[in-house]
Figure 1 (cartoon, rainbow, N blue to C red):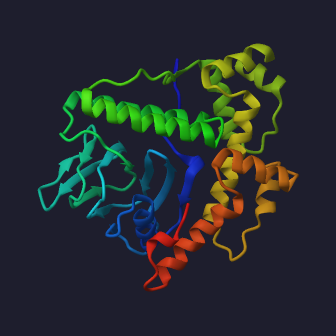
Figure 2 (tube, rainbow, N blue to C red):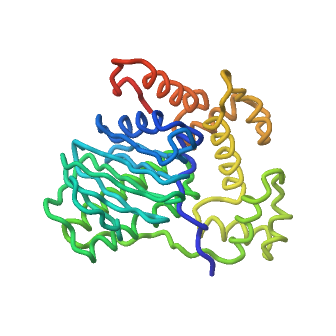
Length: 321
């Protein structure tokens, strides 16, 4: 058996890659509804890292992957904030208190001033539930189970069938975390963290060979099972067909290029064609089905972020994801 993915990710909802500290600050303020969010970088002119975010009915999720040492300051949060370290060393500082490791996770109550000090290559998940029932700090056992649920959600994220599936899973995650925090109990996770080694070979091939064109017969031969068995095995284990997963990986690669684009006018059609999408209208529909927005909206979100950061007096609420 193999681990489902090398590391948890939320690549389908990537928002920032090569972004300045000001963009990170504006993004955190808008995504977490925290007007006093700030980030201090060891090297202010260097790349901060990447940021992915998904907002659903029950709350907002932000995944930060830092490329350098940084300190994230969050003051006056309107509601509870949950932090789960996924990689690297992170320390929590509450209203000037001495730093303490964020393990297995931290739950910060509303309106408290908090900072997170993280080393380069650290990965941190921030969750801001819109409603948080628990009025006391969860016990260590509950925190461990809550952190595990967050990790399971992120491991499954590579296999979301589309945006609707992602939203259902994210809302279920918030419900489970609330229940675990209040009672120590939550519903069992249906998605296994382990993957059949034959599927692991298939997934590695699709991830590591972006120029490869889909061929089910070749994929089945690579995995060591028949085409029919591969189809049903992957459908059963991940909820996706081999082609659907292949298609989603190509869409994620296009999104990465759109988010990373430094040119004035991103050539969406070029990026789509490079990944094998010959019909732009069909590509746009697939993109929205998987990510909940059109390719142009992905680009516009960052442009609006930059415009708000550069324009004094413009409220953060004018940015919409």
